[in-house]
Length: 265
Image (tube, rainbow, N blue to C red; front, side):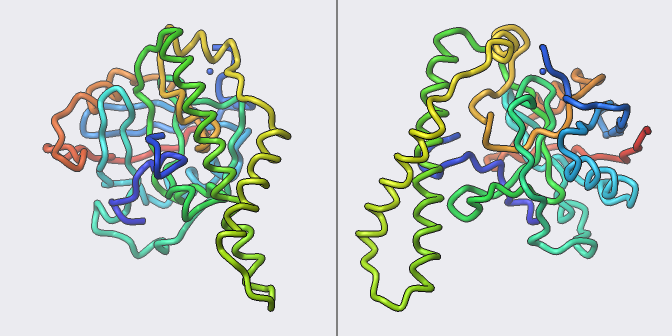
């Protein structure tokens, strides 16, 4: 994966655990040693593909020396790009993990989630095989959360439309009869509307809402990215990294790196 990989929000047109911790956590933890201090995390058993992949990469030494290449205050800190340590030989550029999006794992402060490419090229929402981000986030009030729910609803509609459009165009490729793209787009609208009707409106769980109003997070990412862990200790380190000076590409002016990731079982 290239360092240009972003946490691309579910639509190109929009920037897009109180009661629950990492779900089925059974003791798999990891210590992320950075140039700014140590961060202790836990990995969720509800996302076994992401958990096991992270363990494999950590034990192989892949993360040793990678930079935090994208940092946005009150949002998140992102790392895991092998190109930032001039080592891309271990993994192919298209190395991805199937999405394991779980409603009980959400973007509270300290959540750890996988970065990915956008819905327009990645309708399955597959995760980057290596890049992940740690949520710093901010505290929301009721008005903020109401606007966030509307934003999530808009993103869901756009996602379902884009997915329907891709599926219909793929189906058309196997059809010998000529296909009008205007007709495909109209059918995509219909299919997306039907999918939204079946899914029903988005309702933010009350325990999530309470956390976003007290501890904070980035709720507009919920349901679109795989959260696979959380910070147990070291949020002050996350805050320090998030508060560092950055350039116009959100890259820290002063290089900040992971020194080593140690798995604790």
